Amino acid sequence: MMSMILMVHFMLTRYLPTYYIYVAIIIGVIPFGFITLKFTGYLNKIILNTTEMTKGNLGEDLPIKGKSHIAILASNINQLKHGVKTSLSEQAKSERLKTGLITNVSHDLRTPLTSIITYTELLKQPNLSDAERSDYVEVIDRNLKDLSY
Image 1 (cartoon, one colour):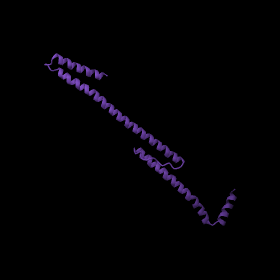
Image 2: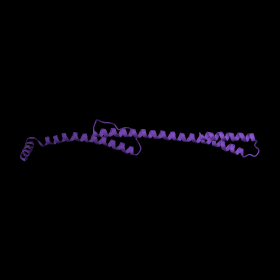
Image 3: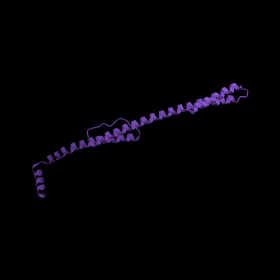
Image 4: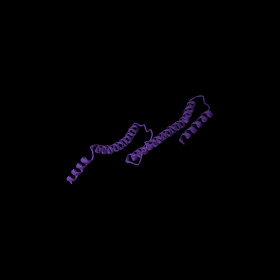
């Protein structure tokens, strides 16, 4: 086996000039280098995009190039990004609804309570007739019933 390798080596060096060997190496290395640079650049885009995502900047989707493992990774990252955007949108909507509910409940409580406080102060006046006093008590009673529903 070793003698065959030596024979091939002798034939290549004897019959092929050295520059053919260099040309063959360059022809093999250059395409490999371009392919490596292409994937490295694509991977760098993915890394930059995910770094921005960790900072809260969801930004644009990654381009999907081909069907390689890196393209599948980019697609998965895009799907995660869309899930986060949907979740954030739903969370903001929930916060708005909660704020609106608190505002409405606060208003619904404040209006009858203000009326009850006002009529209670009026009942404290010593020069009220029995009819006025009865009317004030009815207003207070009606507002208390409104609060209980």
